[in-house]
Image (cartoon, rainbow, N blue to C red; front, side, top):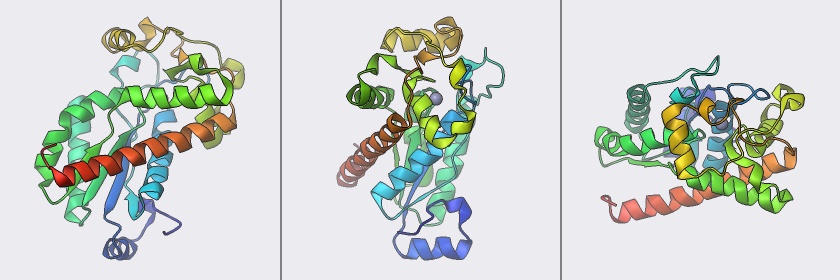
Length: 261
Ligand SMILES: [Zn+2]
């Protein structure tokens, strides 16, 4: 396995060599540039996405990481200054052009992850159209389960310190801990306060997507960031990467056996 698996840092002869050596899986993340409470920078999901994609690629083996789509569907965060939001059709166009480009170079499996909940429903909706666009020779797989993402963080934080009720899915103890590994200099611990502490039920998420996140959490936080640690961040990263790699292996096998599944 090469030290670097990030496509954008490679030369074209290196990419050709990798493809010839069987590196025919591409992983890429859909992130977001959106508010993450008063204590975290806007690029949490973009940076987390790139790191997560790299961890997933290393677990899958013979996989390269295509550039993260850093901006995502964040309409429900637009009440907060700085958030940039793509229309669903824009995200779909980007994903389609990524997938068709990668397929033309010979990638046979493309795994799309989202480090941002707001991209998941659009991804699930566009998946069949992406498959039609690339044709049958390249598998397109996408992880779109927001419940599995939040559930993984809850399990990890619960096991590590019993504070799983602080996982709300946005700028919470899990995401804040992740930023302690990725960009500790940009975490403003003194601004970390509790946000909306209602459990992240389907009803709450529906209200948030409909009326905006500010309607349920005026400070932009779902959950509570207090108690964040580097250790929790590392465990969240590792565990979610394990969950995603397992998901892609299973999906890939199932679709190879039955492409209509
Ligand atoms: Zn986030």
